[in-house]
Image (cartoon, rainbow, N blue to C red):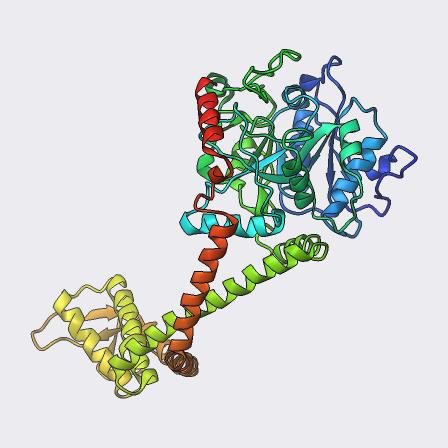
Length: 534
């Protein structure tokens, strides 16, 4: 797919022209039932990157008829995709379904019928992807939650709502992620107002979600429609026969009276033109859309599904642009967020620099004690040269020498002295034998041993590397000396930074990064009881 100069967003008073979309013809095996409301799948993408090709390919196999907006245009911010979705929704009947997915990091796993039937079970609500912190390790979980809440919950009086009673206790999705959004056209046109290109879509939806939980916006707690790629262990790829046995679908409900009987339950999993089905290993739900956020690598799953692999997943430019537009849409529009986030960022930088300086100072102190005075000479004599000697010895042993281990040690000692003491690559004790250099017989009369003529080159190379490393070692020694002289400053910065970060984490997040502190004891007890009943 090549960029088109004709690509544009839908005009307010007319249906988008064909040139603004990329349509894929439905497959006969996935005809969309006429009894269901029409479903439109959109994405806003300026160019091909990440898993965009896999998204288009999967939509073709599943007959999803995905529509691409903004192709070939300049990206102006994350609010752009919400604006495109809202403009498109205003042109459709209020009862039609509109779904927006990210263009670079999503793929379809189930046909449109499964998406629509699972969405209808949520009632007249906009459904978004859920995100958790449970997949992060230890203290990183708290730091992530603190950074997240500094931007998306600057007003700490508004807590993140607890999961609904039907939600699986194995997966606690409490945070909003706008990688995938689905809702009725009328609801989307009504809710998504006053959005600019610079608006941070995730903060916008997060504020709406926390202001009045589950009224207009709800999280897909069990990954029935949207699954966020957390780790490889959280997904399992199965043949359709096995997936039909293991898949479980829980109908969502928003009170303890049970799910609504308005719509029949959706199928747990449907057979498709893909090579198999993907289940969430924690809930056993078969998600319809997989969101591979933060440009993670899921090529292993693409290979199993028979989809194209990702493109440019490790480009630094993509991460930089993502961070720029994300901060531009939050910090620039909210001074409270700017102050809080800036304070956390500055404290984190000071703490990290202090810890690194403290570690380097400790290494330098140990090195100085070992070398007494000259750090560079110590590293060169006790670290670099022994390492090179060890590498050369391993190469010599692997080279197929036929002498005994004791003879090899003697040969190595001789070659070592010839190189490091005389600084020459010639072997005066060598003679020509069978077109190769040989080491002369030992006094005991052992057989001459062939030695490849590449070894003088290797010795010369090691000498050159040693000389080239000398300036580098001078720089390293200078850094270590500076770290030693500033060790008390680094120690103070580490203690102060850790104390401030700990205090801010406890103030913003609390002891439990999962969000249990947002509930009072009675609500938590009722929630646990409802989950056991479900």
